Amino acid sequence: MTTRKQGSVYFRADSDIVWIRYSHPDHPRPIQTSLPDLRRDVIGEAECKRQARVVLDQILADIANGVSVSTGPLTVEQWFLKRVPTRAEGKKELAMMRKHGKPLLRTPLRDLTPAMLGSWVKSLTGAPRSIWHRWSNLRKALFDAVIAGHIPHVPPLPPGSLPERVDADPEWRDGARYSLAEVESLITDERIPLHRRVMYALKGLTGGRHGEAVGLRWDRIDWTATPRPKIILSRQYDEKRTKTKATKIVPMHPVLEAALTAWRAHLEATGVEVRPDGYIIPAAGVFVPRRPHSSDSNPELAADLRTLGLRVRDGHDFRATFITEIFRSGVKAGVPEYILESLTHRRAATRDAIELYKREDYELQCAAVMSLRIRTLRSVEAVAQVSGSDYGPATVPSKYAESEGNLISSVMTVLANESGQVQSRSSTNAHLRLVSPESTGLEGTRVDSDRSTVAATSPAPASPSVSDPRMDALEAAAVALLDAIKNLRK
Image 1 (tube, rainbow, N blue to C red):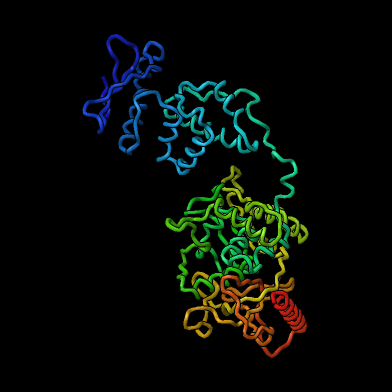
Image 2: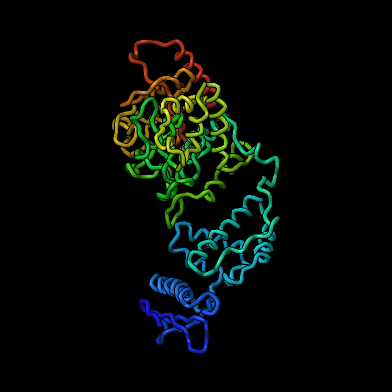
């Protein structure tokens, strides 16, 4: 008999089946159980003891971690439960199996057969890619069971069990994106709450996944990078690595820069502390704050699209839009395709040694992002003249703050145009041009601070006394447009 920690592995005199014995805090006497699959006359005594020790060590580890231990055959559900403490996605994998794998949950791992697995896969409903994902979830768990010594191998799936990896609706993918005009509306329309417009700007102008957008913190933006500020997408949700474990560097589009400026100014003006390590997108949940999941954001997006009279689509379609548009405009601008790919599908690891030392040209990446012609013309409440800081472009100057801490009713008109988008940004500061209420024809009006919108702007003129005919023409057009909007609202 071999003793190992609080347990032991042994054979009885009248049997070739190996036995294990261990102590459990809920049982007054040691528990003894046999392992019928491990026979001395089949695989030898030494191999029987080795595999039995693996099982025993797993049971002792489960007891130490507070996981319930069953002395009977290990079922599929019990194995998924055992994997939860050791895997970052353990709870998600268990939930998926409980939802889609009910016929297999109570089946012992050693009793799984190819026919049983094939029948289960064929019974699954949904898109072909979703069925593949559910099978992959189970197959991964079975591989872990082989490594742990619970089963000798993963039962093979009968040929033809899995569907082809194609879209269930052959016409769906072509329409699963937005037009640039629709993105502009989602970013700037005042009927949409400001924090959601900021999230749509992050998704639509960085190509980031939902988790990367809601997991972005203020200190992961390099505002001093030239020629454009730099966004570092290395985490998602609560500090988890990105889906592919890759870190993506995306230059900040001027429209996104102005939106973040307005959002931060709104937070500070309403008394919210903007910390360098704070999340840009606010938490969801009333009682237990958490990072917003797509299940929270997609219904809100659907409601916003209906408000704008647009067709309902998914939040992930922002990523498809960014990739489509940046390849379209970037190729026309002469940006190499490998630069465009680095913005959205950078590799986390590579087997090619030379790839480990190659660095993308950031100026070319900036050129690719700046090729996106997002044009907006909106009025917002006074945000700030941008000043240098450790983690963002601006704070609200005290001369613009009221005693209640709200924003003043001055209107900032921000103009975006092609000539402004291609100009370089100073490494230390940028300027938003403040226009007085008198110049906009909106005297005495006040815009709700949560519904303000913002767009890109070129650097302020060196001298206010110098008049630019192009700017004068744009300002005249802005005044006419704002007056028209005011009349329509009346």
